[in-house]
Length: 246
Length: 59
Length: 227
Image 1 (tube, each protein chain N blue to C red):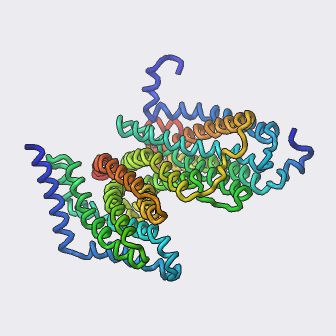
Image 2 (image 1 turned 90 degrees about the vertical axis):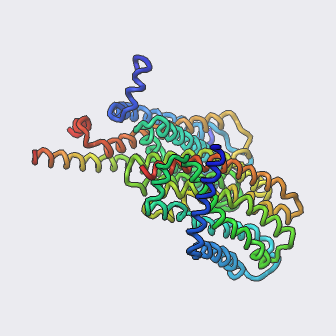
Image 3 (image 1 turned 120 degrees about the vertical axis):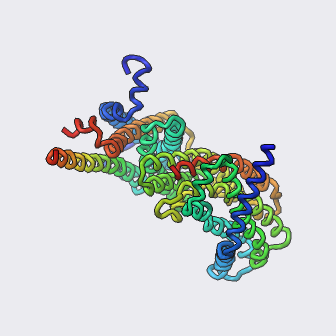
């Protein structure tokens, strides 16, 4: 990264990216831990008790950042997938498959915390609220992507087939979100919105932003660590990889 | 400061199950995922080392 | 000149698929019977209360049609893949997109259109009135082609993959949700005394979007699967 753009092309090859990812991921993990500590401190000790929801609203500090990340990772995944299809680079497909499990994990966290928030606020573990429903469908999209890649043995075909699916999915995500919202308003569903209920105090926003940053760094760290595994699995027989074994 | 004592903090104003259930599962999954990645890495490294050794024996 | 060529190729593909399918009628009939049986199971599970059945009919008929259309998706390319004619199609000078569009159209004629035609009959089981039946048919007429179009992408992606059938449903069902919402919503809106035209317009928009993108994505997926 010291000298200019040339390096970026260099790192498009798995062989060169492998050691770079190895050097970078601990830094991202450390940054993630630091942001998480700051975010938790604000979330639990600085942010005041909410007038309506009491202490229960503190779930917002994981729920909202997790749902942001779940959507963001899908878009990033589709971006890498599209890049892989367009330029036929091996690393792009590997990045897409390295991101998918983390994205699915954040989708699961968003759903889980949404249910735990919904129970005291709405009196039910699950409410067919537009956001929760869209999040559930997003989880299905992630699972479809993972299942498709797992079912195809040839890694190149798995990458490219997954890429087409991710791109079709990313075109569909806004349509699905819009249709679910439309459906929700038509059926007069939950009138309380999880995220809008407490007036957004500045401290709350800061807490959420810090937690979102923590999740972001965590995602980068896990994706880099996972892409190293994928590179080894696919190219471990090459000469350069043998040095890693020593 | 929001809390007068540790018990107060843990009780979360009566929302302990929901708040700690959320944060706990989030923390747990974010611990398990790196462990799974590390296991995956160790597995592939072990396989590669074994193959490498086998190659050297036969060579 | 070229235009005529493409349309005649499209017609040839559709005719070929229809001929093959009509030679073994079981495929069309299986889809149809599946739809009828699923729709008939619900009253048995829920109870014969007419008012309740009338209320849930749009959702049930739409979900039934969705599942029935999905049943036959896997066969869209499978037979041609096995006997090698799909590879011939990829290699032929005709653009693959035209051939794919022909196959999608044939699938709709075999699996979508019969569902649209039998839906009013099933609607009578649920005591829907004439107006609701007309809107049900209109919404299915707009929605089933979207199912064939979007489903083709999944069928192409899972070609020759182990566990293809179940996998296909996992990939495709989430993408069907907007069609389901607007389709069933059209009938429900009308029953609630609102205009169904908004829903139908959105369905038409989905159809044109799918008609534009799906053959293209299917072509890309087929090339990947045949590499």
